[in-house]
Structures are given as C-alpha cells and as structure tokens.
Image (cartoon, rainbow, N blue to C red; front, top):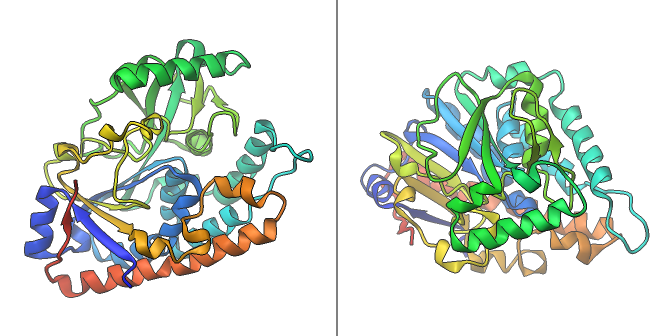
Length: 357
C-alpha cells in the first residue's frame, strides 16, 4: 500500500508531467496549522530540508501558521533534519500540570510552551534570520475591536462575532481578526496577500519567539501574546484562525512552484471555515501548488486509525505514556512519506499526479 499521494494545480501539474520536480523549481513552502496532525509530516520535513532542498541555489520562502510556523522556523536552523527530529520529540512529550478532571490553564500552557521556544531558539535568532536561502514568514491573527485585548466576556463574544461574520464573508471577518505576517524583509513575498485584511511586519530577533508563540496560541487553550515588539499593539493569536491551511494567492506568483507537504488533500482557508464545505474546494489560487499528503487508506493503518490530533489530549487524559507511544509510532511511520517522495523525484523524471479539486 502506498502512503503518499500527489495533487497539483493546473500549471504545476503540467510542469510535473513534462519536467518532473527538482529542488530549483521550488519558491515557496507553506506549513499549515493543525496541531499534532503536523507530526505525520516530520519524515518529509527532515528529508526535504536535510537532503533534497540543499540541491538548489534559489531563495525559498517558508510560510507557517501555528505548528507550521514552529516547523518552518526550525527548518531555518543549522542541521535542520536533527532540529526537526528534536521538535517532534518536544511536541510528542509535551505535558502540562492540571487539576484532577480539568484541563490545564491557558496561562500555564503558554508559560510551558514559551519556555520550550526559549530553550530551542534563544541566542539563535541571528543565524535563523540570516539563512542564506530560506526566508521565514510567521502568520498570526491580531484581534480587533472587542478582541484587541483578552477578557472573560471579550473573547467568547468576540469570537462569536467573528464566527457569524465569517459565515457570510471571509473577507468581512477581517473586521474582527487581522492577518499579521512577521516576514524576513530581505526579499518580498513572491505572492499577493490581497485576499484578506493583512499587514506585514519585519521579522527580527526581538519578535521571533513572540511571533511563533502567538502563531501557536489557540484561543481558550493558550493566552494571547500581547503587544509584540515592532508590531501594532493588540492581542495576537493562532495564525490558523485566519489562515488554517494557508490557502493564499499562489497563482499570483510569476515563477516557480509551491511545494506543500500537507496532512490532507484539501486546503481550507481559515479555521472557522472547517464546517463550510463550499470553501474547501481548490481555486485558481492553487494553480502553482504541488501538494503532498498521506493517503486515507494508509492513515487507517496508524494508531487509532487516524492522524494524531488534539482530541488525543482528552482521550488519553493522564495516560502520557499511551499518547507518547501512539504518536511516536505515527512519527516513525511518517518516514514512508519521505521514502516515497524521494523515489518519485529521483532523476527528475516526469511525475504522474492528480489535479487538485
């Protein structure tokens, strides 16, 4: 049974069928939100950044939201394969103190996770931000109006307003939550961000860790990151709220392809769009995208017949060893995706893929 499936937008599909795929073809790599689901991509990440992409010479823009921001920041460190393996270990073994029968407090989760980011990135900001080829872009969601600050009433009312507005118009949700991208300013992003209310902020040593923490700060699970240095004042939350799967206008790129390792074949625009099936379809924005994802029938062979997900924290409860065992097995199996991709791109031969739909 094959583990990997490949889908592509029209332009990317033509390229794959005629010329295959080489490291020099790739200009952008997005990394989606999705929590533990991202663990299934660790084998691919280690192969792409540790072995395959070094075969090119062009700059590559790494776009990340939530766990995707953590993955892409880690990929910018020296010895990326080893660093990405360490990141997966950190994620799998995360554990938080909590009262019996209750979840951990957002304050505690933010403190523990922030300390882990400090451990991995403190003192390494300069080498990460001076990577000779990679340009990092961290996606966050900045609250507006009622959501500009945390609060017991502000948050549920504000997010209810965002939810209801989004059902009518995704663009209108920008009145509640603004996309703020912390960007390596050595080169502009090679695509437009006109699809949603957006502002870009230069990524620097003083805001690297706060922006990654903010990008991973799921509302009600972690605290918002308040007033990030170099950015407009306000509360910053998970980048996946506005850009769950980074369904951006890659069609506006003038050259190159988007290589997208993803945990599913659909690219959902925002977290609040999960229930809106009509927004799950591929659009012209994905014209240059090559999407790598696990096959559903292969996923069914993993522990619990699914990808790791946030529900596992509740399902396993205090059985940390049980969750670690299940997630570690899924992580080990993720190497299959890397091995199959390596075989597909060998020698630059033409690649048969399916059209994104």
